[in-house]
Length: 253
Image 1: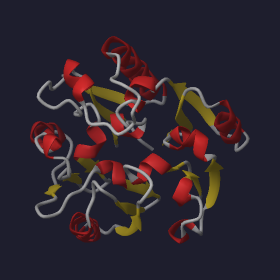
Image 2: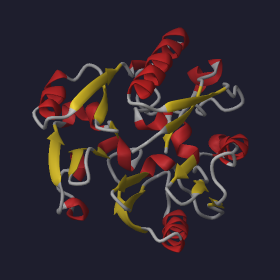
Image 3: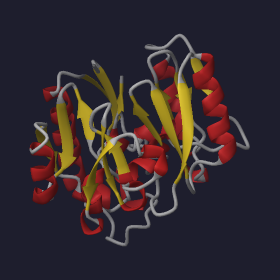
Image 4: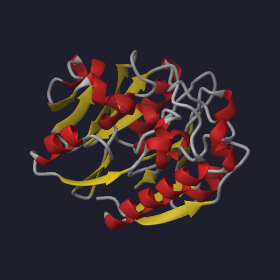
């Protein structure tokens, strides 16, 4: 059960954020509206949401999940691979110190984005991607082990982050697309497969018995509803232009 979330308001510099999507720059006023709708969806799941001010110095800082990993036993400040994002962790650490006594840090030469870490039950899967390297994963595995938690790595070749293509719905069920549908690392789970042309729907958030999913994917919504899941749709069109998804926009704990 989650009780709290932390989000960061997008700044006007959002339009200069990193992207490989090829969908054009986001519309900033529309992005603000969608961010407020996202916060409302989190609150409807019973979360108390701490809203941080925009940080114009870091265009991608609204994707706050990449800057930290929050676990039941510690917080971990990441070390983003993109040089333009490295400073995002500095302003976030004092916020996390309000909630965590133990805060760990990924250090060079390791790189780690929170979007590459998926928790399923008490186990953490760490994607080895263009944003997270083997040294960053090794450091995180040690940190988690010291806190009594387990972790393992998963290659990521088709997506920006692990959770771009696979997310956890329940401790037994994953929503996956592309390379993650048949990865041996996930062979013990029930996989709900998302067609490649609907890959944007694979990034969902399970919160306290509900599932937040991006709007505009009625086929995937029917798949999830057939599992007895309660669905909330959130329009993510402007964040998709920056390769962003639902999980990216909050830290939940």
